[in-house]
Length: 354
Figure (cartoon, rainbow, N blue to C red):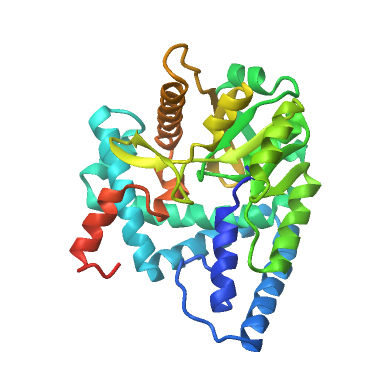
């Protein structure tokens, strides 16, 4: 969802403020303090802004080919991210194979290391495509978005987005993260969300301007709880991305057969306001072409408030699984820590150096 959690852009800016360069490969190094650091931040913002302006003017073909090239380079140079993506994607495809869900070409990766490695390489290309989409967001008009997204759950989308009202849209670090929010705003008008402030103020201002122009109402994290509840009580929609625990305050759920944590925020907001909760995801099926899904999160009719909330969180995780199995290599969370047991095993195997 555009602007709802632009984590890749935020991480790039974080690393750029430290390194003076973009972070597609996920590698960082310490920067010198003072004037040189400020100059690096200024140069990085200039590259992002000029590059984004140029990319917006180019036709689709060259942009997507450049994304594939950049993703391939990142795959080769970023060993740590490559190793983590391999571990996470192996867990996903092994679960898919054990449960006989998803396309056979993905399930083969559970037993064929070459197929798994191809999947990891594809994940880097997906990440690069996401970066390009962030920079090209100003091109994504309502007509563009509706022309290029095919809905797999038409009835559910029409029910959820048929009228402007209080609802909570939950997106993922998956596929085209921008598209679900853009599509929702084409149906509902402005949507309120909360995002973190980027260290690089020029990039922050650049991305802020793009997202606000599409109808996104952005609030800071400090006032997020109050503002999001207020928006729901004004009968307005809000959006959040909640498939990965970034702050460390998530609640344990089972996802792909193992315990992880996901943010409780969307479910708590639904519990406090009575607003319906939906999970959405949009995957790429070709350069500049997408398919989207959306499902409601059922509300349990029995149990304590705590039990109902935990049941909703687990159902949310199940819906995340249903989205990811369509294209595991487009789940960009695979580049980050998801399952503690995998991270612990990796640290033990490397002597605790990672």
